Amino acid sequence: MTKMNKERSLSKNQQIILDLIDKSSEPLKAYTILFNVQKKGIKAPPQVYRALDKLVEIGKIHKIESRNAFVACKNSNCEISKATAFSICESCEEVDEVSDTKLSKFLSKFNDKKGMTFKRFNLEFFGLCKRCKIK
Amino acid sequence: MTKMNKERSLSKNQQIILDLIDKSSEPLKAYTILFNVQKKGIKAPPQVYRALDKLVEIGKIHKIESRNAFVACKNSNCEISKATAFSICESCEEVDEVSDTKLSKFLSKFNDKKGMTFKRFNLEFFGLCKRCKIK
DNA sequence: CTCTAAAACGTTATATTATTACATACTGTT
DNA sequence: AACAGTATGTAATAATATAACGTTTTAGAG
Ligand SMILES: [Zn+2]
Ligand SMILES: [Zn+2]
Ligand SMILES: [Zn+2]
Ligand SMILES: [Zn+2]
Image (cartoon, rainbow over all chains, first blue to last red; front, side, top):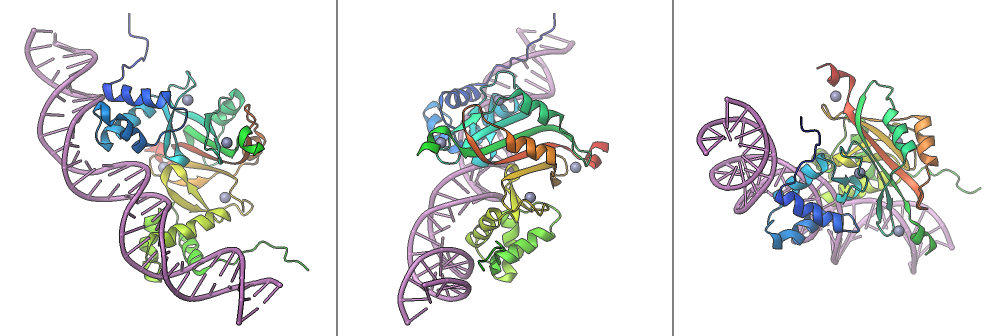
């Protein structure tokens, strides 16, 4: 019976950092993470960046490129971060992962005119969230 | 007769930097730009970043967020950088502005479930360009 | 269990990207 | 001329990210 699940057991540093990001209600920056895990023995940037790289690679977290910040994936079926979309409030900086079947289908099927083969995309929407619109 | 056109005449630094980006066949990073315009009297990062900010604001250039680099807008009608899409080759780093009516319509009309109002989006596709696929 | 290769780790130093802060100069309008 | 808004020049520093090493841990093959 071959091993079917890709459940990778995270390393200690990876788990510490994922836990922190997971608990956070907002995107976390690498150095904010660093300051918050120093008590757990993670003392230097490379340790943080290595864990972040791996977590991104396996789809546990995503990087919000326009903010240089990281959020946990809420979408259990995007193990491979190959199709990501976010909504970002330019006022309060709230970030949500957009999960819309039509959208992801449309984009996954999108074909470039110049013959590029797409493996992955990242989409960031900017605007005002409900709360910030009222103000 | 009120002034109808929004043609803003660029300042000296803005023009120098736009010229450089315009001539480049690849995305330029801020410090690459800095090194290349020092002979023209632009000596420090803030001068570059200020010009870049303004050029992005008026839609003459776009920032490729995943690369921290800037490209000239090839699309005469995206004066306001509110709907941008790029294809990025992960092998040779070639970047092209995707100009597809269906895509931009679809995304511009996209409505968030949580009631956010979108003013702008940025989409980056990653993959392999024609040439890099062959290799 | 032992050996090995891959992955993860710890550490120091450094590279790269971006902003703050402040003083000065230019531009167009009233 | 006076004013407001935009742009400039400059020095210092903040924030983000990687290079380079050597060591340790982990997981799988034999
Ligand atoms: Zn996700
Ligand atoms: Zn908001
Ligand atoms: Zn454009
Ligand atoms: Zn290529």
